[in-house]
Structure formats: structure tokens, C-alpha cells
Image (tube, rainbow, N blue to C red; front, side):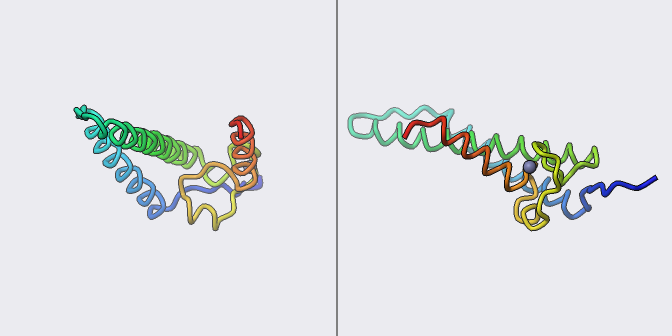
Length: 123
Ligand SMILES: [Zn+2]
């Protein structure tokens, strides 16, 4: 029987992911707390308050996405498929994994998905 080259996380990699998740979680909670406090803007401050709120909401969405990605990466590590692209099944470039340990897509699939996402937004 040939042993498949299963990639699991080293202790350090797992700790790094968990650390990043904790950081994102803390940041998310801070932002949610901020968004809970309803400002009472008057006059010119309305636009600014709306703008600030939009900015914070976008950040919240990004952080939620990041946490979900980290959870997925940790899940694939448990199954022994960490570092394997979820979309095409090819191994993800180790350099990419080192820079972005929560990624579950290879660079090719990622850019293809981004292209698709861009296409759906009108110019
Ligand atoms: Zn791929």
C-alpha cells in the first residue's frame, strides 16, 4: 500500500491558525460592540456616521469570512487534506500556504473565482 502524501498541520501551524482566529474573533467582537452603539448624528455628521458604519460592516464581513476560512482549514487538517485545493484537488503551493495558512484554494482556483466574482459586478 502506498502511503498518500497527506498533509496535516504541525503544532506550530495549528497554533498560528488558532492565534489568528482568536485575533479575528476579538476584533470582530470589538466591531460588533461598536456597531451596537447607535450614534445620534445631527446634520453634516449623518453622512460621516453612515460612511463609518458601512466601513465597519465591511470589516465585520471580512473578519467573519476569515474566521470561516480558518475553521475550514482546521477541519481539512483534521481530515488530513490540509493544503489540498478544495476546488481542483491539487496541492496548494507551500509558499502560498506559508503566507496564508487559512487558505483552502490554490492560487489558480482563487484567481478564477475572483474573476467570476468580478464578472458579476457591473463596471
Ligand atoms: Zn485549485
